[in-house]
Image 1: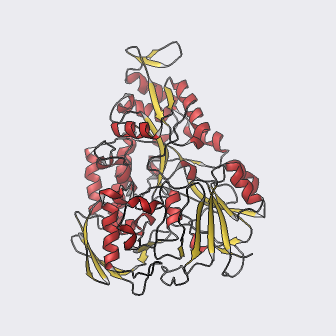
Image 2 (image 1 turned 30 degrees about the vertical axis):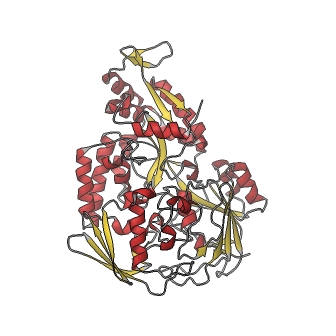
Image 3 (image 1 turned 90 degrees about the vertical axis):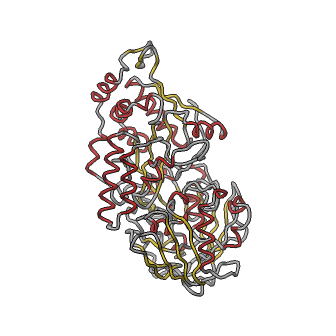
Length: 540
């Protein structure tokens, strides 16, 4: 079996972390170590380094995790989805939903000594949408953005091309974090190593590939959002340790205080050990899924897509591979995502008889000597461009289950250039990824026709190459909705259409977790599953 190691526009399956009995499962968790205390340096082992430190450019969860301690946002979104002031003290929205006017906080400074003001906001929003930035997520979150103007030092007016009900939530994302404007004037690639913000931490040396990053506390930080405060820690030392046993061993031997992404076997070993605690939450957004090419090839036939969805026992595979630690997916979105529609779950049930009937209806009625289905002498073969070596065992079991159905899945190992070339040209049948996001607007990112990867458009996130005019009309309705309940109703309708079209094959719900030694307290998660490093403190 061969694999592709290239990651494209994803949270990273390697960032789908362990949840087990005895683990925390709420949006945030705190330990029982008494009153918070200041001081100390947290030593953290991270399983995957970001391709770039700048969240304007990278879509990865590791990028958000490492950028958030440095970059604040205009708006804060709490773990329940509520929107609150942060660098903006308040805002007004025009009746037509096209103009947002933000009043900005006084006295905020970046760690390079420059003042935060309206010009900084303009520079950052323009940087996100600048084609030179080559944003893989942030730009799509604010795709309605037209321009912004500094009315005065403390006021910025943002104009949208069309109403966008998710605009404020997008501004709260780490991907729209505010850089010191002087750092945005050069080549965007320079931000992949070092970023400067106004956050509770700074990093003078920046990120060193294959090594990590060191943060020191920002002693001047006095503008945290409601419910937060200045960092308790003196610093954080992050090391990149991609090997699972090495990362687990670093924790149990005392070399580090905390680790991300412990595999299920390690979680089972540590969950009942009082010397450690596993904190975890389900990621909102898209589940880890196989994304079928709906535009061409065998999977352009919805009957074949539905057959693959029904014919493979996805939940059984997840249980076998992950020892019951991960939850099988129940729909297009993670069940923790606002507007998730549980009524669609039966459509994802295992039904091999229905799968066989669908393949017969699609004309794949023959069988070759290897037992695979054929049509007009051609084998039903699907090429899977594999994006993460960590899911090898799962891919093997999916491959075996598909063979029982009469479908051959071929795992392909391509170098980065070949992978991108074939992604842009649509020369594949299946790709796997997950995609965390705090709200249902992620559906537009993943299924909007404007986000289909092409040579002209470049890398983008609609890897199913899905283009449904009814869904496009629904996206417009959702963006223009001023009533949150109406917006959610439209997003549930989009989930129904995507389910009817079998435009995604959900497998399991990724989880964000941090496993810590005793004495590491204050662990919490943002609404997008990002660990809040600024909230952690050391009891000893």
